[in-house]
Length: 310
Image (tube, rainbow, N blue to C red; front, side, top):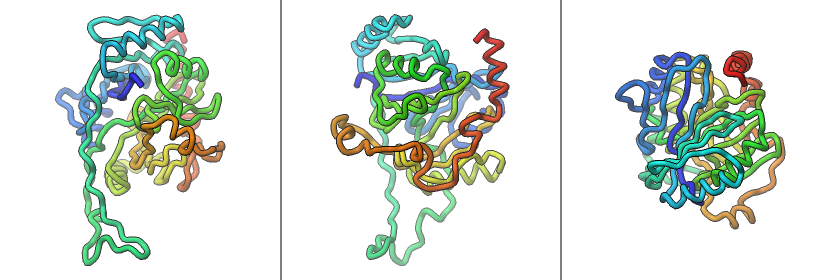
């Protein structure tokens, strides 16, 4: 796979100050209130003012400039406009209007998390000690892991990402949702259908379930109305999850223990177990809220796109 990394997203929001405050609560670092860094991923969020919330762009990483030439060739074969200059390939997926910027960069390196000692029936890994997980420890997530994007042309956007940019399919339900990867993560971009394009959610990797819990609890203690969905565990991707709402109206997921895929053949043979529509939500946890399917601000989004000539 030429692609190896989801590096950053560029967001348009109506209130950049409120968005910046939220990222500060998350523990992301910033020097100017518009660029936000995670501990492992570097600069991963670019925020600018926009009349309605939009995912303006996505930055991806490859190993070498020859990888850019390969992507350029595939986009040309699709008849997809793009530019390749100064070591960066730039293109716009026409149905979501997302600008993709792809350039060579180093592969992600993460220091391993310290494994918590868990007691279980017949096994006492921790004795005469209270679990470290019970002590308050809200801290920044480690890095941006994936995004979920609504598109009014599900099949066409899927073709663009797969045949043009070089993503791979991990799991999917035709015309409903496709989980696509550009790294060893189970998914880095997922596509869902929507009347208009919008960022459905973006997700941040945490060390473990306690990291997820402490961080979400910290944010909810400031504003309980941020609660959206969770706590629970997905079937597809296998990760623990907790979803909150950011000030712009997009959902933010904190997760841990995502499936990893480094052998396509093995995943297809034994990892990609059969799934049904009942597995799109959770293996366990609360039911998916309706706003996760149809966002509360859908009329605002439709009006916004109409004003753009969409």
